[in-house]
Length: 389
Ligand code: NZQ
Ligand code: ZN
Image (cartoon, rainbow, N blue to C red; front, side):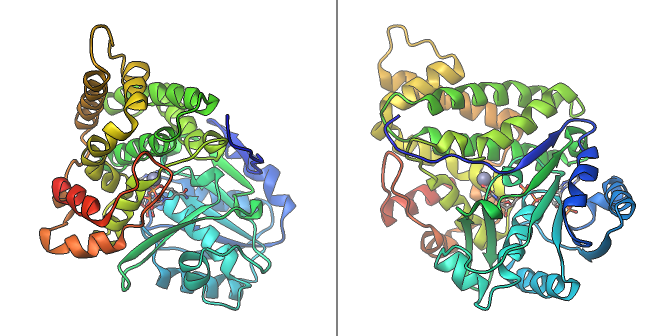
């Protein structure tokens, strides 16, 4: 490992069928006023809301609700949440939902006591909070983003046609605790479930396809990807297979809880392309990534050929015997594409509502990253979007 680093992950996890018991252990550590944050109502239909409220009441908490956090939470909703948290004099924000709810809770946390505009401060200037922040806890209901154990928060500004993620370095912004019960994810519609699966894969690939040194993180990631491919194929056939869903939930957390990024560069260009698609179409996050991935990886393959060859052999079991590195690498990407199609992922941005007339907006909204095998120029970004249409 060539890079120096500091490692600390402060989030306490409660994992498994009885994970919700962890709330009883955590809640006494915080004050009485709890801002209960959730999305469009799935938790009311599947009973998770009732369970959480019963535990909050049993612990003597005053519950203040902030419902309606939409997928790809907006800056307008953030401003509203800040007002609610202030009015409630919240001591704890409890996020019950997927990555959107959890990301939003973190954004509210850093904004409640902030005098500046949070969009400008955190999502344009990427500053760390200088003010007091509120603790966040999470009950996860959708698997994919890793938001349950990281400092990431992604907010969309539809007027500016921008979707921007800030990965807060400050450990206080990571959830203090997260409740991970794989059974809570059974009610996800298939579209959301497989979108989350691809989000996990993409997180790993973004961190895998960089650097040339021999690095422990790459070996860990190969194991995570093998586990994900195996379990995802089981889960699409049998959505209530606990073994598969629990492995996927755990893989998602480790894919983006800062561990595998340590000691190496990371890419994240697929996420920048996907976020541009999200900013313009408001499409589901994982699908924005699947729709741009094949053109992107086929484009950069030749710049990181040895890693793509290794990916083919170690993740997709491609036999390298008697083949050029290029042929092996191409077989690996073909195997990945076949896996993506078998899950039912979206493979074109036109299926998400993008059109040729949006190309300028898409290119403008795409941030250029420098940690991968090829730093893209604007023409390459345009060509990748065109091929993704
Ligand atoms: O709003 P409700 O009614 O709850 O429905 C949600 C939502 O419509 C539904 N859902 C969640 N759990 C469910 C369920 N439906 C039935 N049963 C359940 N158990 O699923 C839909 C999608 O939820 P959402 O939270 O939007 O999904 P996801 O977890 O994929 O989060 C996406 C957001 O996270 C950001 C994305 O950009 C996007 O804004 N990301 C956050 C990251 C981070 N913090 O590190 C990294 C990621 O790369 C990503 O960018
Ligand atoms: Zn993602």
